Length: 346
Ligand SMILES: Nc1ncnc2c1ncn2[C@@H]1O[C@H](COP(=O)(O)OP(=O)(O)OP(=O)(O)O)[C@@H](O)[C@H]1O
Image (cartoon, rainbow, N blue to C red; front, side, top):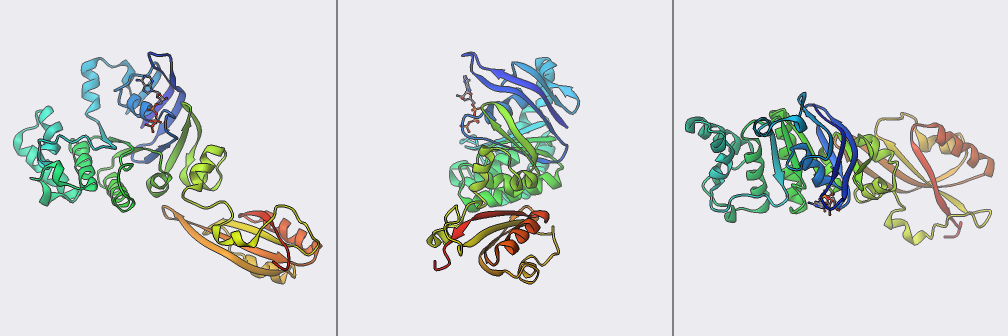
């Protein structure tokens, strides 16, 4: 378990990059930290491995407060923390196998054991046939696979990923995220993912913290935060991967916020987790409330294995029936929102 307690970092120029950060990261989970550029993400990750000692607070990893260790104890504990970077940081004059060997050489691991571990880890990351190539002969995704192999070859219990997929194209991002998921399971390694791309969080992080101006402004399970974001910052991030606004396809309908005429039709957005209700919602609006219902738009999205549906419908009927139907929708475990109105001859 990793516990960050009241972490504050004030740089020499008096800039307060982290302000009273409190976080608990469980063993074996993939935890995301998201924030805009300059929010303090890299500073936080560098405080976790003590490359940047915090100005105050405690960094407790597996029961040991890293801030209280002597430099030789710290060197020993750091072996338990692997790290991967946005620009891979590979040694260009070493082959793939020699890059991966580097931390084992520093730890004086016997040659025969080094070879076995390197072979095993290169197989895990899918680079066995590239072991004698140099970094300049590899694609970005392959370079990051080498970075990952080097970070985990010494069997650390924690892997810190500082924007490790930011320099990669979307297809490669997916394959690297799959690899990290695989490594998380097979090696039972706790992964902390620093990211500014919401896709990364959505794809693999079970829990997430949002950081802004050096403070954590929201944290919780990814599914909860995505479905019920509390801050404008998180709403903006989510908007980049899941639509919460009126979809582009409906822009021609000229939806207005206020009802202008008596016979204007109402546009409603319904959002729901895949398994929350067995009620035939649309059928009931028609049968029980005598409404005319047209489906205008539907989408389904996934956060890891949980599905999220979104339906935009247009309803028309008697005023009283509409009010009762809307209040019924509010009583269901789904999110319903009146997006606006369109004139009946739209
Ligand atoms: N050594 C330093 N001395 C002074 N200020 C620093 C130092 N390192 C970082 N900062 C400042 O601290 C703030 C947080 O920086 P940090 O790199 O942690 O942010 P970040 O969220 O990782 O951003 P990015 O995504 O752009 O890397 C920034 O305003 C930065 O200018």
